[in-house]
Image (cartoon, rainbow over the protein chains, first blue to last red):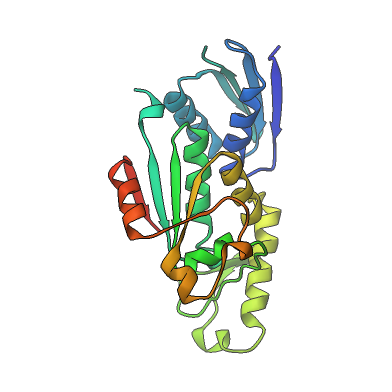
Amino acid sequence: MADHTLDAKGLNCPLPILKARKALKEVPDNGTLEIIATDPGSVADFEAFCRQTGNELMEHSEDDGIYRFLIKKSA
Amino acid sequence: MSAEEKSMSIIVTKGSLDWAYPPFILATTAAAMGLPVTMFFTFYGLPLLLKDLNLTLTAAGNPAMKMPMMGAHMGLPNLLTAIPGVDAACSKMMKNLMNKKGVAPIEDLRELAVEAEVRLIACQMTMDLFEYSLEDMIEGPELGGAATYIEVATQSDINLFI
């Protein structure tokens, strides 16, 4: 179970990233944020976001147009 | 590689509905990725700092502007774009389309940029030229000129002109 969940369904670039950044502020260090999105571009974007910010993209999956990401906030 | 060591600046020169997006999308995203960002608003980009935005676009001279319509993509011949009301109708269509597709209004992206402490510089010369004052603008912009921007640019890793 993630520490926080962000529903970014229906939002287009760059909103899922911007909202995830905000949501991460509420997550404790080494805690996790789950993001649910429908933007297919968010897959590449969350990978890049995590590489750049040093947070860890632990999981991502897609099921019927719904994308789920699990990010671990770096300490 | 630490994100904190990278920074970005953008010169914003265009203020139509369509051209307002790239600078605000990139500025907010870069800020979210930990980069200090500066936006320098000049010429037609300057009105993007006005309190009240009523952004419009024109299809005139823009053969690439084709909107999805009834399963096809339709452009508008230049001649028709001169008819009064056509630009307003195109702008409304674009805003409806953006809303439907979950694209943020520029007002929201701008607010997010301010919230993310993006540094906003209003070009003093353009302020004089078009007779604007800081009271016309949202809270946050500072005034500056070419030298102010160049100083920022020399310290930035990414410098964009949009």
